[in-house]
Length: 342
Image (tube, rainbow, N blue to C red; front, side, top):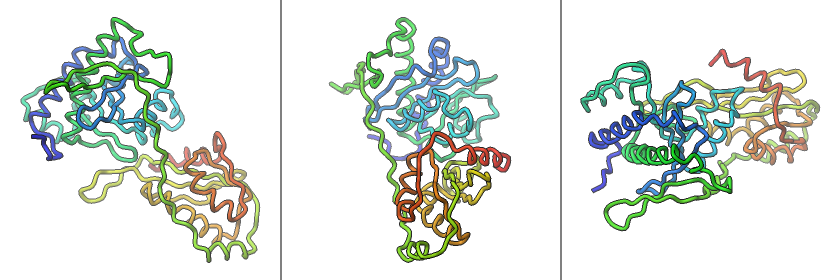
């Protein structure tokens, strides 16, 4: 009977630690790199987790199991070094289960208690197994029962794939870049038989968070008001490396909205909220802001499609040009200057 308690059983933890220690003993990072990505299909949920073996650089040893297309997309951004300027962003976007090997100081009391309950002992650098769930916008957290089970499966399949990769380095190469080597379970009986398949990731779901519209009365006031027009403003939203936690809830990273004048580099407005509130209420707050300062820009610059989607209706309504650009120099400079505060 399946365990419906989200807390892993002692037997599930035992299987995970055994698989992790066997994986560490194999040390596949000695011949594989973090760009050698392959998939494992969860026998229970059917979700595909994309595996990344880390450790070739001799600094961080781990198996990352990235969740579906969202996890894969984030992983590809990380390995392409897209976050070289703001390295914290790599943490904020990860959607994965991680089995890493750390120093003792990196473990929490709950981890040490689990190790003791299993009768295990570790000593030395990069010797202590650590298991965490990474979810975009949230602090790395402890695993649930289904996550322990899937990560155990992934570690075992990663060993199978890595041993074959060692003999045949072309194992993960497909003529089409759109397909990935995936280990897929087949269940002709009670025993699972694993087979290899080349699969294309499912389409990435576009974020479609609801946006609170600006009231018609506010729009009419803004159109009638004799606001000063001019200037180019840059807008962006992003996580900041400060950890917040509500009582008995998982800690999370706050989301910042930042508005900067391109020419003067002056920070016009910023606000910290959770991600959903930040995005859904920003047009209303933007309208309130320009009504308060009695200034309206000629143009808005953004570099992310989600920001464009949120601001385009209001910009059109007010006759403000809005454009997507590669970078936001004034805003990014302001963001760097704020790093010491977080």
